[in-house]
Image 1 (cartoon, rainbow, N blue to C red):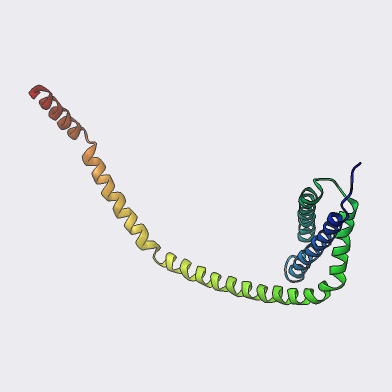
Image 2: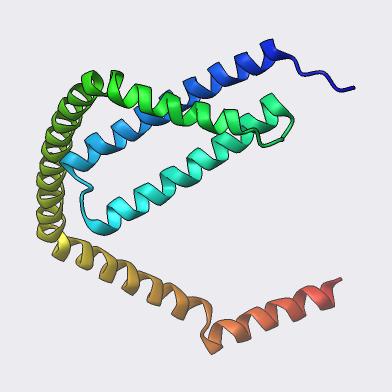
Amino acid sequence: MWEIDVGNQALTFALSMATGGIFCVSYDIVRAVRKVALNTFWAVLFTDILLWIIYAFVTFVFLIARTNGEIRGYVLVGEAIGFALCRISVSRLLFPILRFIAVKTAVVVRKMGQIIYVFYAKTETLILSQKKYVFKFFKSIKKLLKNIVKLLYTNRNIAVMENAFDETKTKA
């Protein structure tokens, strides 16, 4: 008869509760970002669907690793209990910190965006002020190339080249 190892199942249940706690912390990070930036309907919908896909994949890998791919109810219950316990305890302390970090990060990103915009505007003005010199340079190169092409491919040059080829042919 098949025997069930209770110690292994208890460890699997504890690990599934820890996995649920990790899910809660990751959701808190997403919530903090939503408070600052990504709070439109479509952004919330997309991030929720993405989180559900990630959570399902992690749960699938966990089930493969701990239960040989068998779906065990106590694993799913353990994840739900771990998520709920984390939500009512750690999340209340962690979320304000994460929100503060998200706000400060948004301020830094906004300032960096302003700096990059100023750099871009200065570079664009510099390029536009040098535009006539660049066009003048390319026009002179174009004239130079036209003169070289005329030297290489005129009928007179082709005739001279054919005569030179005939002379080397007769000498050999």
